[in-house]
Length: 319
Length: 182
Image 1 (cartoon, each protein chain N blue to C red):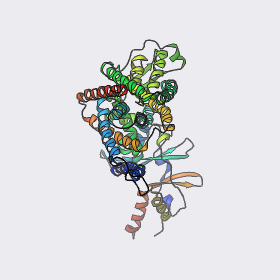
Image 2 (cartoon, chains in turn orange, red):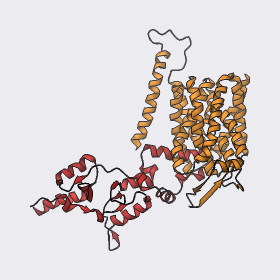
Image 3 (cartoon, each protein chain N blue to C red):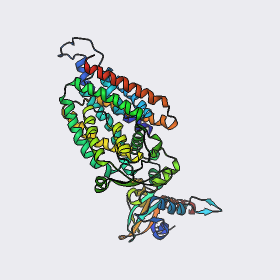
Image 4 (tube, rainbow over the protein chains, first blue to last red):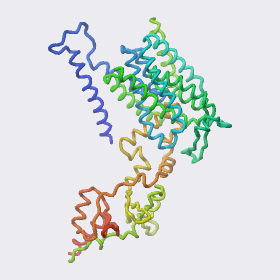
């Protein structure tokens, strides 16, 4: 099995090299290519740095309890010389990689609820497409300012939002009853059967309009917003909220990713090292998490996000 | 010495462990555990079958389960392939990134996970039967088929009707008997 992992890493790096090879030809100025005006770093420099940074990001995201996409977009757009459009396209795929890996398992475990996910996904993915189109149409500095503000908002949300494992839902609302959004799951550790239902469905669906637009516009993934809305507003149990949110991401982010892909904003030379880095980092993070969860990491992550948010905001203002 | 036939060494169908496709893996494991573990003085001799047949009510053979296939379902993240490992990583990631890693069932206790996974339906996890022999097939041909298909048991048919199972153990004993008796 170890050999298989090595094979995956080898293939990832190999693919990265193949994709980057033409760039090598350009960077070294092949026989007929004009001589470059300025001496930049070699072609492998940025993919390698991206791989290293995303690897650490993967570990921190898992230990800090946030999605990889949330860290990726502000940090890479703030500190790397890539255009925001490419970073957002890449961020969506980074968020998607975790969601697609988790989806089948969460559905099989009966934790991701299709009844809850489908109506929400319909709204969120439609809005994610609109958000992606808006994000690509608006001037970059405006998007950068909005991104900075959103990131700072996420920090506030991370600091203040309290989760409720089993919210008290007295009576399901009419819309959720009509759509039959309720379910049952078995608590793995205790074997207890948990019946759940939701309320405030219209408000929750309206909030998903905003979440969808932001997910598409910034390429952040949207777990940070999905979970509080599903859990605190709509009253779904935390386990169902986390699982359904991750499953939802695979639908909404896919919709938005197509727009970025169609506009040529997905560069394999950025995506491949980032995906390989973040997945390997997450793998290590999950292993570390099984042993310990240092509380300080969450504070470091919030601090990093706040700093990246302020940087994005100032960058948008041209300061 | 007269060459023995498949029907001489096979285990008749009614003596081989079998389970309904709609049963849970837990039921299948119980039946196989009992059949595999022939108790002598309270100690399991591990002399019984290593596989369990999946048959419908008309005794049609639909599939088979062996130890590896069972362990793969009970502990997928360890015994399964790359996709199972990725799936388990994905689930752990979902809970870790949602800041709810304490709720992660993929990391729950070993006992709880095994019990949960044992709820799988037999029909969803059974393996395909790869190869079969007729009652008049020679021992050599049966052994050849075991090697060719990399399997350990072969159903024995008489026409369209399954009458028994021949295992690698039975074929080994038959060949060993040739040596010992000569």
